[in-house]
Amino acid sequence: MQELLINQGINREAVEELSRIKSEPDWLRKMRLLAWSIFESSSYPSWRGIDFSAIRFDDLYILPPFEKSKEDVRSLDRLFSHGAPIAGNLLQLNSSHVEVIMDESLTDKGVVFTSLERAAIEFPEMVKRYFFTDAVKFTENKFVAMNGALWTGGMFLYIPPHTEVTEPLQFSLIADDNQGALFPHLLVVVDEGSSITLVDHSTAANGEAPAFVSGIVEIFARSSSRINYLSVQDYGSMSWNFTLKRAILSADSQILWGEIGLGSRVSRVGVEVVLREPGANAQLMGIYFGRDGQHLEYDTLQLHEAPHAKSDLLYKGALKDKARSVFHGLIRVNPGAQGTDAYQANRNLLLSNQARANSLPTLEIEANDVRCTHGATVGPIDPEQLFYLMGRGIDRQLAERLLVLGFFNQVLQHIPLEYVRERVQEHIEQQMK
Image (cartoon, rainbow, N blue to C red; front, side, top):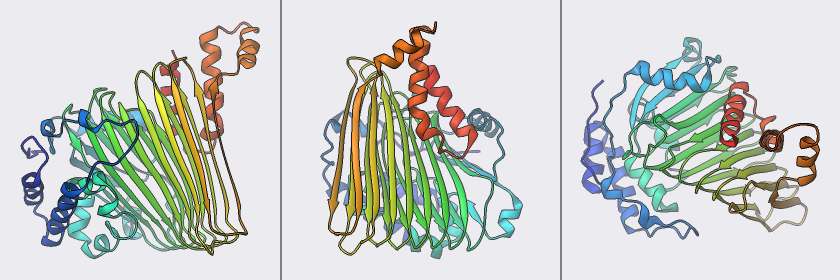
């Protein structure tokens, strides 16, 4: 497969060249240029603790060279799934869509699972309806606008009404270029009465790449739909990751959202659910493990717009060396959203004296018949638990590893796929050695 390369640097000319290379329709080219104009006129977000001057945009490639064969990429991907049964897999290397494989029976049912690039050409009206319209807008911040101008590859998933997909679908983004600027965009629409499990896996092939990621995930859960969305981020140790994810939940829909953060030098992820209609239910589970000098940040929003909806969030993190985490969590209950049931908790383990965790859970409530609670904890491993294990002949290193895995088990047990649980546990065990 041959891949074109855009000159180094991120600018308007690169946006225009990207659209030309992709032979995009005029409506999409205009969207890119509008997003770019918003990017140029926007200031950097005031995210405390993140120094944007350290990002050298002029040195980044928008489309890094395509060097690996399909089989090389498949072998990297199999290291994650270990051959577990899946209904389909979409592979992306750097900014290039490599291939998509899906069970033919799903195609016969009307399931669409393809790159966003292809969907914009083959299903333009459907993409126009959902892409940067209701869930995420260009104007939200500078990096969202950047994604709108420069997204490549990506994924589009549509599940037609009353369709049950029993095996998971997987989107795999594999980076192998140290200067690659990646702009993944996932658009998921699960129609009325349907169900799906989606695994979103991002990793670096060489342990260092990529240099910069600005990603978007838009999820639409229509009435009475069921979604399991499992995201595992393991980018390279020198990467910067700024990603916004938002799900819009209709009446009686449910989402189980597992967000796993393991990689990146700096990672800031927005995790937001909008409970738009009565009966919506969101369960948000998160795990992050920081080491060395990593900065891992999560900005979560549980927005209750409708009455009689429920959201439950539990994020757990462990930090060693000089790693730092920041958790900003907001439960927002709008006027009229009576009968809201919302919970939010953030728990942190500090595995060294130099690790730091800042936790800021917040409530904003404008209804009087609600049940909302929040809480946060930060502290070291319980010395009594450690003493108990060591007193039974277990060495300190193994005892700490067992306690950390036990700490995360409350979240891991809710992840419905065994191979995802295993990969997360393996990573944590390796980093604890």
